Length: 70
Image 1 (cartoon, rainbow, N blue to C red):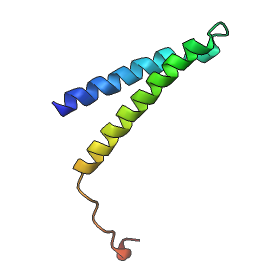
Image 2 (image 1 turned 180 degrees about the vertical axis):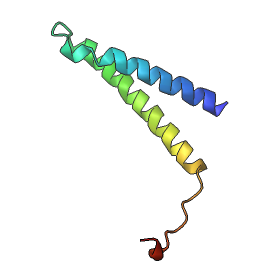
Image 3 (image 1 turned 90 degrees about the vertical axis):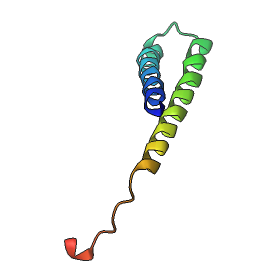
Protein backbone atom coordinates (compact mmCIF):
# COMPACT_ATOMS: atom_id res chain seq x y z
CA UNK A 1 0.00 0.00 0.00
CA UNK A 2 2.85 2.39 0.83
CA UNK A 3 4.39 1.78 -2.60
CA UNK A 4 1.10 2.74 -4.27
CA UNK A 5 0.77 5.95 -2.22
CA UNK A 6 4.39 6.84 -2.97
CA UNK A 7 3.81 6.25 -6.69
CA UNK A 8 0.76 8.53 -6.64
CA UNK A 9 2.62 11.26 -4.73
CA UNK A 10 5.61 11.14 -7.07
CA UNK A 11 3.37 11.04 -10.14
CA UNK A 12 1.44 14.09 -8.97
CA UNK A 13 4.71 15.90 -8.29
CA UNK A 14 5.91 15.08 -11.79
CA UNK A 15 2.70 16.42 -13.36
CA UNK A 16 2.90 19.55 -11.23
CA UNK A 17 6.50 20.11 -12.25
CA UNK A 18 5.52 19.90 -15.91
CA UNK A 19 2.81 22.52 -15.46
CA UNK A 20 4.74 24.81 -13.11
CA UNK A 21 7.85 24.65 -15.29
CA UNK A 22 6.01 26.52 -18.04
CA UNK A 23 4.79 29.40 -15.87
CA UNK A 24 8.00 31.41 -15.40
CA UNK A 25 8.26 31.87 -19.17
CA UNK A 26 4.68 33.21 -19.31
CA UNK A 27 5.08 36.95 -18.97
CA UNK A 28 1.32 37.29 -18.46
CA UNK A 29 1.33 35.07 -15.34
CA UNK A 30 0.57 37.10 -12.25
CA UNK A 31 1.93 36.72 -8.75
CA UNK A 32 -1.02 34.58 -7.65
CA UNK A 33 -0.60 32.27 -10.62
CA UNK A 34 3.03 31.76 -9.63
CA UNK A 35 2.43 31.51 -5.88
CA UNK A 36 -0.10 28.69 -6.11
CA UNK A 37 2.17 26.26 -7.97
CA UNK A 38 5.09 27.31 -5.75
CA UNK A 39 3.11 26.15 -2.71
CA UNK A 40 2.13 22.92 -4.47
CA UNK A 41 5.77 22.33 -5.52
CA UNK A 42 6.80 22.69 -1.87
CA UNK A 43 4.22 20.07 -0.93
CA UNK A 44 5.45 17.77 -3.71
CA UNK A 45 9.06 18.21 -2.59
CA UNK A 46 8.06 17.37 0.99
CA UNK A 47 6.34 14.22 -0.30
CA UNK A 48 9.39 13.24 -2.37
CA UNK A 49 11.70 13.77 0.60
CA UNK A 50 9.38 11.71 2.79
CA UNK A 51 9.46 8.91 0.20
CA UNK A 52 13.26 9.07 -0.02
CA UNK A 53 13.61 9.07 3.77
CA UNK A 54 11.21 6.17 4.13
CA UNK A 55 12.97 4.15 1.44
CA UNK A 56 16.35 4.98 2.91
CA UNK A 57 15.32 3.57 6.28
CA UNK A 58 14.31 0.32 4.59
CA UNK A 59 17.74 -0.18 3.00
CA UNK A 60 20.33 -2.19 4.87
CA UNK A 61 23.25 -0.16 6.22
CA UNK A 62 26.26 -0.42 3.93
CA UNK A 63 29.06 -2.57 5.28
CA UNK A 64 32.08 -0.67 6.48
CA UNK A 65 34.62 -0.52 3.68
CA UNK A 66 37.83 -2.35 4.38
CA UNK A 67 40.86 -0.09 3.98
CA UNK A 68 42.53 -2.81 1.93
CA UNK A 69 39.90 -2.28 -0.80
CA UNK A 70 41.63 0.93 -1.92
